[in-house]
Length: 135
Image (cartoon, rainbow, N blue to C red; front, side, top):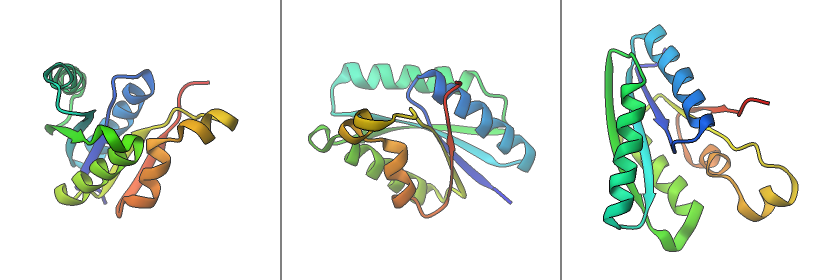
């Protein structure tokens, strides 16, 4: 069913849980796995930290075919830019499934901060799996 699975990670515990889900699905379907991390801006320190997150994520999975991509969002557009960049990467790579951890915010915090995962639901053309944090 799934041939190409993309997972967006940010180094959080929820992203690690989502990565395990993506790995399980990739192994079950013998699918390719692409791990992405999005940085805001063009600072070298952000690139270094982003690459560390990607290397750590890649080292923690045991899938047949794994690649990583560091994505760059425009800092001026905040979360909207991050979701747009991830959605474009999923489309360009041909992902059948996008796996994303969600912070599970509620109430005023959700209204003020928003959610990359929530924005991705309306932007991604493929199936999307939202992984919630441990309760």
